[in-house]
Image (cartoon, rainbow, N blue to C red; front, side, top):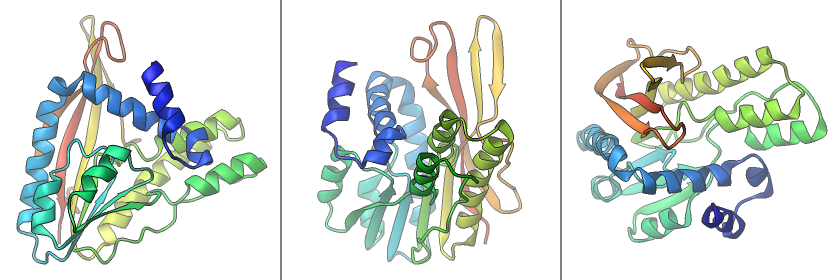
Length: 262
């Protein structure tokens, strides 16, 4: 806990992202991966295999964009840098270790971008005490030949919605619509891109222990339409074995890789 607090103090991050929990969550994810590396190994392997397969036969190979690059745990960065002339790592914050790793490749860049398009606007709305909740804006990665959305779809609404809820300005219906709108926007943005698009996302979640299993809906009831996306792989991610989040329960995610249909 002390190490996480010191990391939080030392890391560069805008004030509003600190207050909204982005830096804290980033540091916590890093610590969890270190603790649970063995449990996460299968998920990491499946992600990398799915990405290499999706990128390998991409018709054009000038530019790739990775949306939600984060700590690069599950990204085959070296392979992508060999396949594409340019690789952009896109996230709202980039850990120092990810920046250092990117510098090892002459054709890899890091781009700080809010993938929801609404974080700063939301922060200002809450500070000002104004309504309504802001709507997501358009993203900008239309020039990429290959776009990868990497384990971020279900995560995009979490911190914005938690910050909005904490303000006490918005009711449950507003917040539910807000979370769904962020997920729908991301899917619609991906569907509109002209290049090849690969989506890796959790599609289900369960908490198991004591002889019971409780399912949860990580995508707010929004499905990934089979008419628009072709599933290429599916696996289970043991994201939080017992002792991590719950003393006597495991948290497991159903994860799938998809390619957007032409």
